[in-house]
Each structure stands twice: as structure tokens, then as C-alpha cells.
Image (cartoon, rainbow, N blue to C red; front, side, top):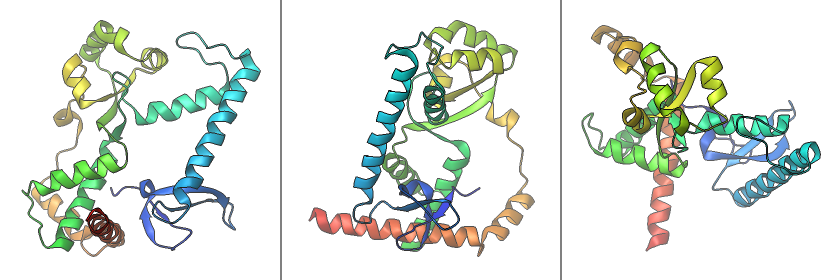
Length: 243
């Protein structure tokens, strides 16, 4: 599936949500408005909103416990809990690196393909696809690819050996919910691996052809092409500014 899209409240274009920032304002329907990062004043506004949010969370914690830190595995307030949940959704629970989920990563792969097609350089085996993927991940602050998955008996044994390396506030989720989120590097290092071959559905050549045919000319492809065009324009602008 393609990555989440949203409409820019400044230029009106449909763009990747990750390429926009919240403006702190709401539209007529009450939905929060977002704008492309490159529009004037948007980055500064986002930084200001982030500082206000951090200060608000700090004040909430201080009201609940007088400024003391909670013990490992505990939270001082609902605000602290929600803040940590957002962190846990985006990071490896073992090394703490910011990770992109498999679904969003596959969406970036499609975006990389569309960008190469527009440049007239597309080849399914081209190493340029990997270069573009790394660039997209770096632009969005992702360090690696991660996945959240339930533990089977063998993975559970490995987790017992490595549990001290897992973030203390994530351990109750693993212990009670029997799920863990890890980057693929930590999976290899600890042996707590998500078996891609066993858990991902097999797709036949006929099914791949049907999926490809449905994607060609679809609204999803058109949206990705627009994002890819903007990426090319940004690359050219940076190249000119660098010279």
C-alpha cells in the first residue's frame, strides 16, 4: 500500500504526509491543517509548536509528581504515557533507532520507482532504487526498517536472554501483550527474528501481474508521481543552490 497522503493547506497539492508539518490550525471541518515543509515559515511554525508541546508535557508531569522521574516501567501521567506511545510506534525497542514500518517502506519503494520512471532511468534491478530509498529515509529521520510482531515460543526464549537490553518501559508490553518491535539489525543480533517467509503471504506471478495492472494509471500512482515530481524539483533546487 502507498504511504499516507494529505493535502497541503497552502498549495493544495496531495503530498506525502511525512513531507508536511502541522500548522496548529484547523479547517472548516475541524481537521488539523498541514503544509509542505518547503513553504515559507512552516518549518519555524512546526518548531514553535514542538517546543510548546514539550513544555506542556513537562508541566503536566510536574503537576502529577512534583518533577520527579517515574521508576522504570512506570508513568507519572497520561501525558507521559501518550508521549511514550508515540515514541514506541516509531522506534526499535532494543536499540532506540527510529524505524520505518514495512508497509511505509514498501510505499517508499513505489515512490522511488516513480521517480526513476520520470527521470527515464527505471530498471527493476537498478542500484539507484536503493540510493533513492536511503535518501528518502534520511530526509524523514529514519535510521532503519523495523517491524512489530508477536513472539512464538522460540522467540520468547531469546527475549528472556536479551530482555535487559529492551527499553524498560516497553518490557511490560512484551510481557503482557507478547509483542515486540525491533529493527532488522537487532533481530539479527539477538535472534528474536520475524520470519518473513513464514508470515508473509505468497504471491503468484498471476497475482503480481493483476496487482501491477490495477496500480498502473490508478489514483495512488498519480499521487506518487506528483510527490516524485516535487522530489525531483527539490533535488534540482538544492543542486543549483549548492553551486
